[in-house]
Amino acid sequence: MKTIIILAAIGMFSTNAMAMSAYNSKSMTCAAVHEKMAQEGSIVLRYPSHHPGLMMYHRTVSNSMACLGQGAMASASVPTSDDPSCKIKTCSFATGKGPNKNH
Image (tube, rainbow, N blue to C red):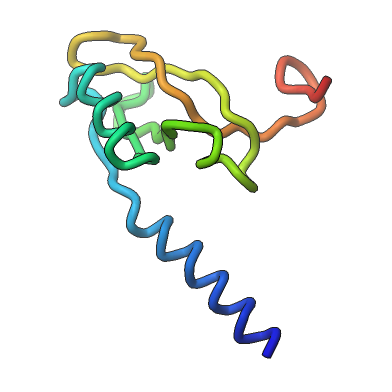
């Protein structure tokens, strides 16, 4: 019985992750990024890296509840069509060292 419950829980989490929408942030305005976050709660933003041929990815969240079990909510930025540093919220694990250390 425990195995069934554990498998059901894993299935729920993997389904949520697979259902998350992904968008190219460079083809959106900053306001559109924030609108999508508000509508969907959590989205993946992708954009070109400074290194040719590589893509960067950020999972952005609308509130701290989306970070449960995935660290704490932190600030970040992504490039959009109208703002090279559009402010977003993301989940970040505390490392215990440097600026991410737990206080």
